[in-house]
Image 1 (tube, rainbow, N blue to C red):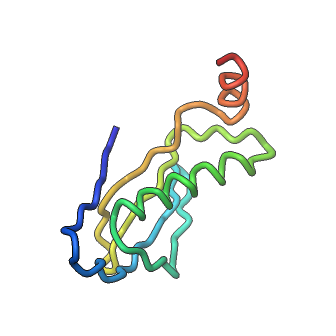
Image 2: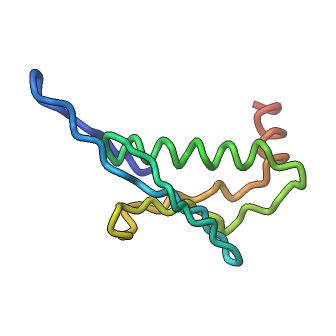
Length: 101
């Protein structure tokens, strides 16, 4: 699993906010984030991507097959910094799995 941590020396200034873009991509569609979001660091952008994935899957009423979907985190130059994959199971399978555990 990818671990992104931000450490700051005690007494130092917080990092300035940077704009990150969270593009949602599948094999057939691209949902481009044209607005972006101002965040303190890449770890926070990663957390936002994971939340975006969770929201997409929890709001899915059609039981979408999410295989191949991912979120590309890009900077303001358009460079992809991190790709966060959707889990390889459908929402119903995730719910069923959590009931068994």
